[in-house]
Amino acid sequence: MWPYILVFTSSFFVDLLPFFGPPAWTVMVYLQIKYGLNIWLVLVAGVSGSTLGRYMLYLYIPYLSEKLIKTQKNNDIQFIGNKLNNNGWRVQLFVFLYTLLPLPSTPLFTASGMARIKAINVIPAFLAGKFISDMIMVFTGDYFARNAVAISNGFISWKTVSGSIAGLVLIAVFLFIDWRSLLQEKKFRLNFNIWK
Image 1 (cartoon, rainbow, N blue to C red):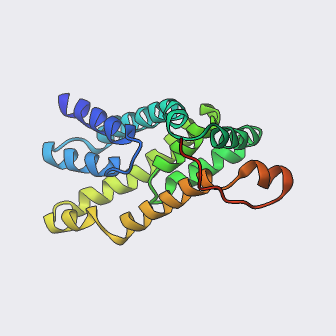
Image 2 (cartoon, rainbow, N blue to C red):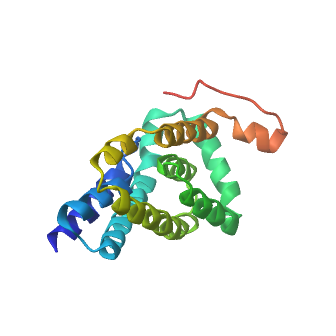
């Protein structure tokens, strides 16, 4: 029983971080192979821990952004959140589809937490997409993880690097675009002076 608790807590802490770390599925694959665990129980424990970790990130990131980012930029991002909250099913669809892609979910939860998008529009769609994508990764990882060279090469690959770059671009889009000006005045402006 304790290895499944380890899967849960490891996935939780990996996805609690506000910066890029290893994907939770890599932890799941490693622990599944190390302890010979049931893949389905690993998925349930890992995805549950990951979802709780992302939810906690979603909850504390607004307070972190208030400390690090200027009030005007926080107001701008919250303005986007208010606009997006009125499109609940579209936000849910975006989150679901985004979670299916091999992109890190840190930027998604950083942006949605800062924008204060309703958790009901983010968490259930993330849980569904995360279960599907992690299921694919864990089963694939279990198949290929028997080869130690494949594991060591899989941590740093063009996919993880490009996924991290795409995630940074997504965060930059939310942070550096003057959204109020774009949505209200239809004028595109960049503002890099956002830090306190």
